[in-house]
Image (tube, rainbow, N blue to C red; front, side, top):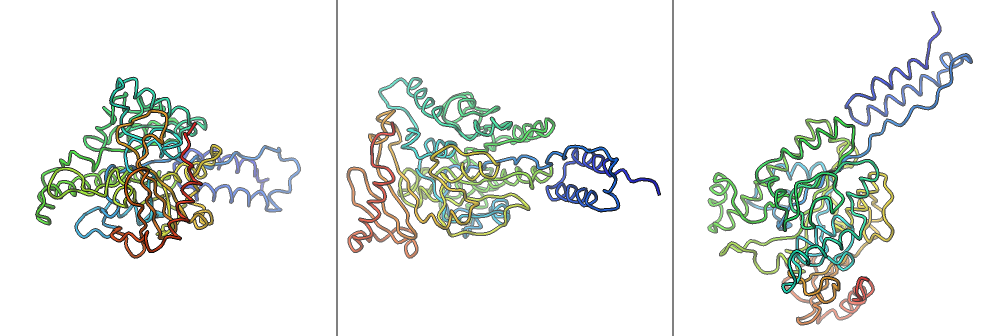
Length: 455
């Protein structure tokens, strides 16, 4: 039997298999097997074999996809127990994810909430605290100042771009042209809400599919921001969905809102199935969150009290989901989570050093999540009074520690304390009977943000 050329075997295997689109376990198997061949005495004991450098790692960079719901109540999902809603694709995503049922956003208004998501900072830190600049200021100049505030921070698209990623913005985007956030590609040119970007989900999913396909052809890792204006109004779902839900409620406004949720769910299914077809589900981290809550007014086409723009659960609570098939073990966590945590979580998963002083934790670090028992948030005016000082725009602050939730208005109104474990609907204010708990939580709010200007 002739001499076995183990170097040729190793290099041939690695060269052939490195071009294949297959799962990570397959690549690890290849490396393990070739290492085993080299360690076998009768094959490796040939001092005349040419010594070659170690083969490069076959681990592919992790892709990232954000799915950001717009104006949706935290219970309005099948997997969260809704009695009527059909959300099979979101339910499937939940079954395949680490789900934080007690997730929150730090503020209950879309523009500052999205700014917090992409910077990993609280609104009082990045200073984009409302949707619109002051009324007495030219809109263009005011929006430009808000855009500059965003550019002061290392956004997630900028950080992954520095590591060779391409990134795509679609859907809701308030901060000017998509490039202002660090995206390499995008749909929004710069008009309030998102101009052309708002076609995603409502009219087409093709831009995402084209972008991902191009990244695959270029062997580039990617980050996708999918933030459709859904189920956000206008609540104009297809007629079949309106008819279905109209049979379940006497409110046409509720039927249309529910129909828009199922419409959104269908787009999530299209996106997840596309990743599956492209064999990307094992090398893509899918992150789900909503930008703020919504309670549909059954009598009018608008939101009800204690939802959007408020510090109540209906405005700030959201499920947060993390999915990477074969890597993240599906589970349901009752630990507190915040959208502030998403940036450090993604950076850690991608092996990228996070910026200093990020306030969030890595949600894939069980020990850190368990140790962190308290989260914080803040609500501001819809239209800013001051572009630079968040304290001037502040309406209220809130915090949740274990099951206790404290809401402190900045000026007028009562301090409210709720036991969310017993009273998730926040119907009974316990501040008078639990003054010690109120004092403790008020002190923690002061420590988290002493109400001094951000700069």
